[in-house]
Image 1 (spheres, rainbow, N blue to C red):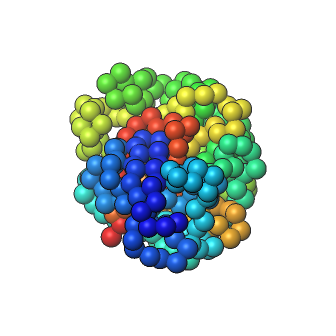
Image 2 (image 1 turned 90 degrees about the horizontal axis):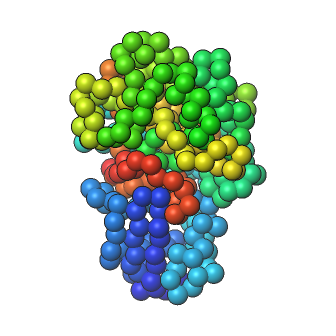
Length: 302
């Protein structure tokens, strides 16, 4: 790419257009945005998706892909918090931070099922307690999606087993205190490993209910619908509210994704929420075809 070349990218909940920067980093493209929307309160966007998704982002070279500047892996840590301003995320290039996770990192290959295979896609099933709500299928892991999104049939089943109802104001699922007391673990089964979201891990922090336009007294769930039934090749998105409970690794060398438990996998302090990075991290470099139900949490890199 030459300095000044026009560039334009559309994500699930925002876009930018501008030109290639005069800043030079070997084999790396840096864009300067002249216009953008959907990214208020952040300093920039760091896209770490597969390079196929970069085709078409160079305005004057629609068939050109932007090749990544590294062939390694990226470790990501998010931590629950109860405030909007707590910057506690960490991004590690070329390695992991063992102080941020417990036990071992378990890896699973990137799925071959399209269109999930174009992103950081994996295969998993989801159970609520012992009840299967989504049989093994393909979906993606994405730091730029706020909620956990699941296929419409799985969403209906989740509503049924939890007793949740849709809140018209926020678009979130809402439950009563009695229903919260009865919540079971929501289990994400990946290969031979199970990653369980406890009842606390399934709720939006009540101290931040007003952030989504909700009532301060309500209990909202972080699971919502992806908008299409299972069998579409992209049947779930493990978003930010999943990743705040588990350490994640995106391994480009071996085409695999890894997860490990953290201190926040088990119930953290009441009303826990997810942290932020200082540059918005989009591990899968979204385009218009990926649904964005709720405004993605802006992330900032320290």
